[in-house]
Length: 205
Ligand code: MD3
Ligand code: FE
Image 1 (cartoon, protein in one colour):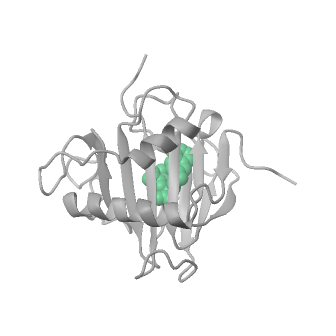
Image 2 (cartoon, rainbow, N blue to C red; image 1 turned 180 degrees about the horizontal axis):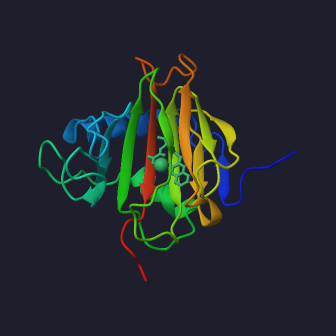
Image 3 (cartoon, protein in one colour; image 1 turned 135 degrees about the horizontal axis):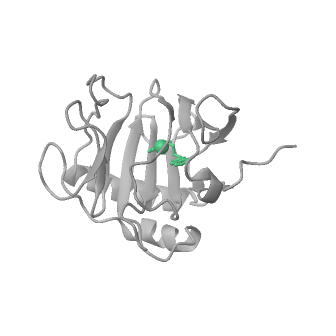
């Protein structure tokens, strides 16, 4: 039996149903302040499948002309991002093993046909901090590989309330979401999946 890749920790059902409902309501308020936008691939302008927003001092955005980057303001409203909710700061303190707080919480919304191709997260300057991910809503098939494109990968089914901590040797692994399993959760009334990723962006050292 092969375990998870080195540096990957899966915490199934970290948030119970009541905590998931509370967190989702909190994130709905965040999205009211910072509406979901459609991210565009650099240069081509091709829309990604997910819709996104952020909270925290910095947010991850991308568009055709300026590409992938972190910035302090929403690309459409120009407002600074809402604060990272207390439940997520508490999660980071509990599982990240990294003293400094997260600076960005990226919110990805997947409808039942959305997916995310294999990619590396390398727009941050602090790779000693892990990425902490929270899944809410429908299950998904998450895939993680090595640090080079084209190597072996393994797949993990993620469910609502699950937390994934990607640190150490996993911080720069290729990863993506192959599919959403429709109607596998009742948390989101209209279905789909919300993923929250907490990240340290600027270097602490
Ligand atoms: C492994 N999000 O936002 S979360 C992303 O489900 C992203 O929305 C996916 O990939 C999602 O960049 C996957 C799990 C995850 C997040 C970041 C990672 C896995 C990771 C960074 C490095 C390695
Ligand atoms: Fe990623």
